[in-house]
Length: 539
Image (cartoon, rainbow, N blue to C red; front, side, top):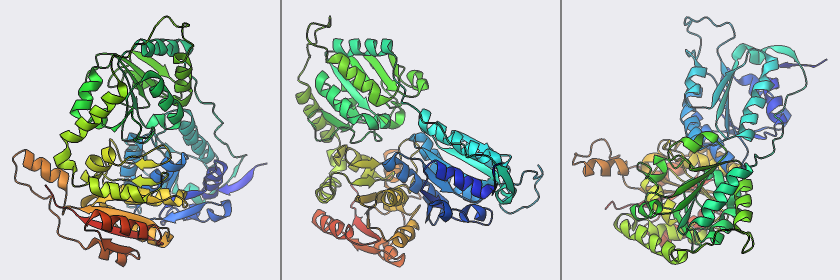
């Protein structure tokens, strides 16, 4: 005989069976039966001020822990509030599970005016998630949860949505033993593909490595392979810091730099690991490569998406790079190819970094002293979250050095605004012993500024550094570049430090790098959020 459980308890039991210990969200009329059982199963809840903030917080939690982030919403507008965060998680391959009630099982097709009635929540979420699963019985709930966790474990992580009809949440039905997603062994690459890839890399006189977020677990073999081949290393935004950005071969986040992009097209072999090689990585259409492109990815579809692979290695990044490293390290004389580098890779990498920085010196100079101040205060394992703001993608991505011990969380691809603050809350909730700092602009911050109240309630030290240029600086610049009169891009001044204090945190201004470093050091010792506003002179 099984247990008789309500749908709400069956859900929480299934989450607990998958080692879920923390969820983010807001209770509502239709999801109270879920909330009723959280504490009994050891699941802690973080109350955000908006469901979009809950989604970004769960995203930040997932990125720093490697475990799925969980969001609980109620029906209708609450779920749709979280949809932008789901889209961002899909773009950046983040394991995110959103659970919501839905209309009752036998709800009529024609509208009845029921609270939060929505034509089809599942259709809406299918547009931004890997799948949206509407269950039809209490017994099916743990199957849906196991399906989501199987997705997270067996392939490219993507967000998922589970909808439980609100009458099932309250209904008590007999259930069997809880179903749990099976353990999965990382996928090993096929030996023939590895052999072809190793031959191409050994033949190359001008190799390069490109590391994306999918290479996060392969930092050690990636760096060793770069050193063995004498290959400069580029990363995408999601791959930032996989290899130390102070390493002589590291080019960091530079795919957008014209000199670096031109150099990449001249390589006779490019090894791209865990990356889409997409327009969002290059900030323009991906360039045609003249050499052999070796792609390593868990997702077979990536092999013919964008820049198609000449050699496709489908498998786990760590297993694949470890095997490739062993192949290229064969003792001298055992391989028919002799590698003769065409150039000094360290010297070339240094020249490329200099060219990248020279090309944007006028634009980026305003942020670099402040970024150095931030770096001087933070430990190596700090977590930095950023927004779709100029100070982040022009400033911190290329100019704030990071290593494998640290993490940089950026909303790539989908490019949502308002990500930095709630993502930092999720990261800090996951790792209270690590220093976490949010970087944002004044425009992006105000999409989710209410989450300062969430941070204040948690009482965890959380500096929020805001570069204030009085509006939407990127769009202002794009309008000016088109010869248009800037329209609807200037925001009325807001005393952001005072706003932080109103939410229960601290706030101050930093009028120079020294003031920023001092304020940041103090903020890291102060419970709750400290908003540090940096007034920015636009060029």
